[in-house]
Image (cartoon, rainbow, N blue to C red):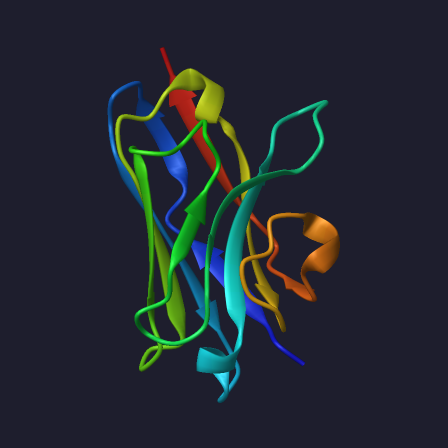
Length: 124
């Protein structure tokens, strides 16, 4: 069983930055692909970014965040970080961290474990 705890959300103005963290309670953290999804009110959960296993994991981003968000992982700390720059009001959502046994997955159905989510609100 993998437990994921997100942190770092908050209320910011457009153009600001936030860094989300997701800490995992599993010894074999490096063996899991990790991803971030978000869900705005009345909308479906959507893919944001994913990183493959190991320290030099390759990353995949949704077109809507490419060039603004950066996903990284620190296997020694069992933590992934989502650096979000140039935030826009349309980035407002609950952000969820997820873990998968597979790599490079971009759909929620491919993820096995989920955190509780952290709210990000971007005002205009």
